[in-house]
Image (cartoon, rainbow, N blue to C red):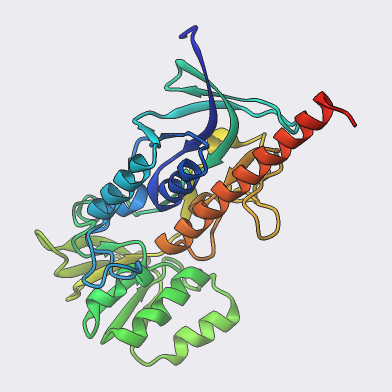
Length: 325
């Protein structure tokens, strides 16, 4: 392990809209932020072909280009963006304490404040044809990408509240929505089930799973299989939405930060403060309700402001101790 220990004021773990927005605000506040991008620089948006719902892009923009622009903006104000993976953390529970972080199992960093923006990863079926067509008609976010399939036939996989909500959203803009439910019942709340079943252009297929996504470059159809009878059926669709949940990328923080039962970091009230002083969480690592680029960016801004105010408070406390009245 490297012997040199680097000391920084603000460490940002993870990139994406939350991390880069936090970096922009932190850099402008002279917090000299250092960002480690993680294994997927730019986050989930780097796998999105078109971003049409982020303010300021009237013609839309592709995800990778948007993330590149956010990085350039953060660097323009002095953020140091580094490729690397935070592999261990040791957070101090004392106000003003120094947080210790290990990068790539080797480099040691001490940070006065830490902003976590590690995001969450959508769960997929991991079928080869599905993975091949991610970005070509296979999506894990109906609210993000549903607009591109307006008036078309699509399918959605899932049985919980999120799947039911996204199916309802798609039904308002698409011609037909085929909903695949693996079991003989839905897990969604009764209210959400009633909403889905009341929409005439949603067809629910129980005991049904994806056998193969059809198409070479883009989604052209779907082959389904009944897991009780083995009977297969093909339908023509242009979009397939996977709504079986997300997993927050927060495993390395377990045991130190308060989380809910699924691993989302719990923040205090309307702030980005965690249970550890000087550690803040933004974006999909703490937001399981909205999961949009714009809301992630908003919490990134909040995290930087919270970090700035925290450091100002610590500095004030140290001055009071040094020069007692």
